[in-house]
Image (tube, rainbow, N blue to C red; front, side, top):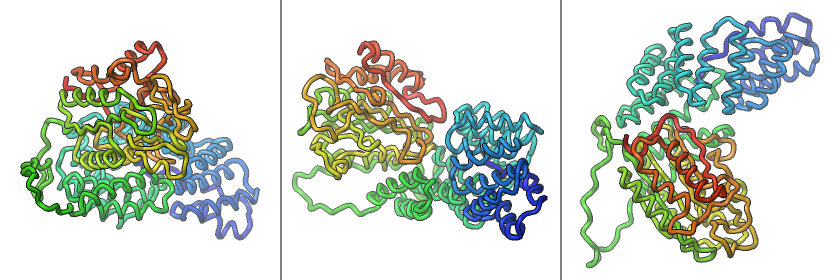
Length: 572
């Protein structure tokens, strides 16, 4: 979250100091330069003023600046950057650098954003808003120490900055300092109890600590405040706060096992984002989770008793916070869950001997370090879909969720799919419906409170080719088009925070099945998973080095991380 832009009104003061048409003076000017003007009207008014070709220099820069503000309200960051760049060319200033830097931040271009905030600070004087926004960019890069240092400067400049306390708390949470995070976010709430954003972030902290009743209470208050007080910050899309509030409360309801209320919140989220082109990640996640909780809330079919039916097992202990009573403090041991699938006995494409062995080896390594593992071998579509959905639903109560898949995988139109053993790969519009969409798994796990690790030892080839590979030991079906690098949950969305994705080889390349009982990647992975005190990205570096050596540079494993801190799968 960012605070309102600085010096907007001061920039606009010189705009109407030269003659202009009566319409522009009486109508276009106020519409263009009033912060509360609706985005479309603001953009239209500023565009008409630019078309008059009356203004030059600083005055024209001011119009471009305000039109950029309008584009920012609409979430069109490319146009924000274009207009602020023109404004900077005409007349550099702190506010315009701040706005462009904020747009780059929203696009995920954190280094460029930091450079713009640096330039704004060089112009002077030092400004708490600029330190705050630069802190956000450092936090986006995962450099939480620098983020906290900038938030410190922002708070020093303005000790009543609720958002700076809030965001410093978020950075502390990413470093595992939940007590420090809670202190800062509590201070943000004290400074401005009408803001929903700090309550939303405290909802996440309560969930991380396993205190689900407090999470639900804070989420409910955040929703009430968001309805009563829509964001006035031009840097905050109007729907984002409400979407976040509903989503966090839904996840708390899910973790508690209250699927009916969770479903209601996901439906509310979808109603908000339905017409919001900038919320595709929220939409994808809400759709997946709504489907999961709807399944969980549905009454189980009754089965007739059978003489061969075994007595039902005693019910498992409820997860922390699942009872109506106040949620207890979380156990010290991290709740870690894994889904492991190995498909090799394909009916209609080249069978693979090693994926079942790979899955068993990885599952054993994970159990040895304390993971609860759902394991499946040679699954058809129905079984694979059922196991995946059950895992995604149960993962709402986990703090670490790991997915491992070995077998055939393909790219179709830029999306990646995992292939059940009964799929017959034929060209056709409905072919992908018979596969498991990797984006669905990613969307279902998108929650920064939980650490998500997805590992795929799959082929990298396109199923639409006309022939099936008949020779060699690779996991390719045909050709070498490769899997797409999964940098998004869906078109236009960034990879969810707290997630690491690893491929057995680089996008566009072929993962080898291997000559022995296991693939080179999975053999190395199962060996290094249990190394005590080895951070997960260091572990993958060791796996990569071993695979490169074993394959003589033919296969180079690839990974992409948005983890929010260091993660250790095996205890130190």
